[in-house]
Length: 332
Image 1 (cartoon, rainbow, N blue to C red):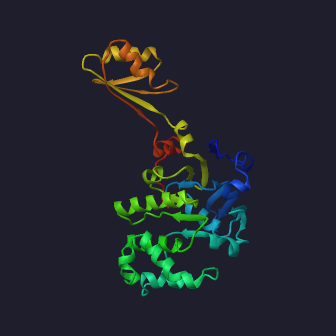
Image 2: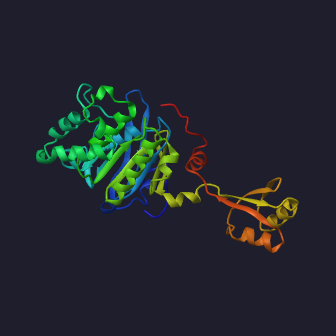
Image 3: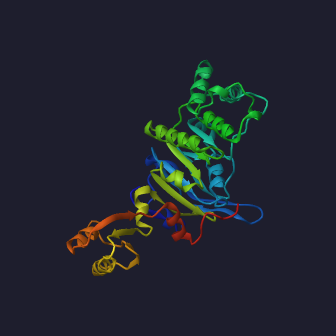
């Protein structure tokens, strides 16, 4: 997918640029979930997660991300619409496709009196497609990857929130997966643990695993994702390649000049067509269509010494606010 795909009110508009089956690991058409109360949790969304991508599924709590993931995995039936994982229709193909999918949804659920390793062994034994001869080795590898080998014999009930989250990741990594679906994977982790999860996601993607990671922590996702989908109030507002999002927000430029030259610098930048604000020697303007190198070049040509120059691209939060008019404080 090379063009940013903005969601619209009609399914036909949403699907116009959705990749074909062969190029996507996750795909939906008009996926909708309406609860008995009448609340529409997910409103006709058309997801398209390219194979090999790290897809950041973003939005505030209550935006419909987790409900969407539960429908993708066959945990909740949609009211209407369709979903495919790895080219297989869900939930009909769940027995065939889910062994190829690792998932962590709404926090891990384990037996509190079993150790971390024993919990992994129990899950693996329940998987008819897993090879019991390699279970011990695979569990050790998974525990090592998430930093839990030292706590493998500790009862799950004694684990901290971050350790429980790590064990959930280990369960998802017990076998090679074509697709990994992670719902708030850094919940409860300290900064070091968060960095480790970020590195793990990169490693998995480099090995060919498609990763769909849902989060409200924009700064973390921004550092690792290749594609993005932004949800709000049950609707998919936009999705596309990470690099294309820069065109959705406002890029600003900040120039610092030597004292006494601010007025002259403002005049030069206005000639370039920039609407400039000045605070002492620091000038700020929306970049617009101007090629950034033209700005310091024009100032130097006018004999003005430039001591600082920075182009500030829009953050994910800025893009979200510009799209919706709200921040990430929507209640669940």
